[in-house]
Amino acid sequence: MSFTSLLVAVPAFANEGAKSNGCPWAQDVSLEVNGKTMTLNQAMFAAPAGEPIVMDPYQIYPLVDQLKLRIVGPKGREWEASLTRLVSGKRCSAFYVGKAFMVSDIERDPDVLILNR
Image (cartoon, rainbow, N blue to C red; front, side, top):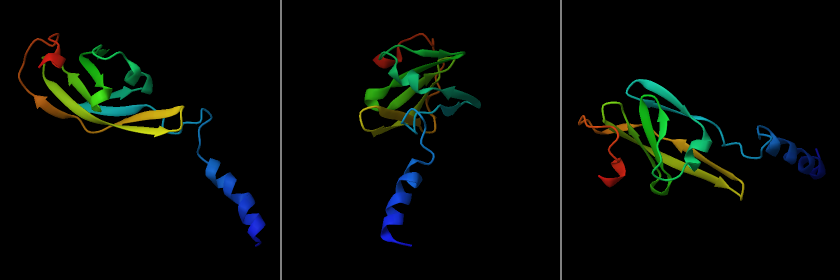
């Protein structure tokens, strides 16, 4: 096998598995909270800061600047999950979500703004 044939084969392997939109990481992520599995799409991470994403009966606050999710349950209990941001170039950005951990088991009104606590 010559050196020239190796150079021709490399681009074919580099493109395998790449998505048509050019960002292989932009995919839905799953999160389990209190035994319930929720699927979050990447557009949820572009929501305005402080605005919850409602996935009945949970409210999800994507705190992208802090790289974490705050999840408020129906009884006011709170969970946090870490975010990992993957960036490649100008157009490829995606988030992965870590395991959710309960940070408050105190029952309270779930409509209280958690960002002030």
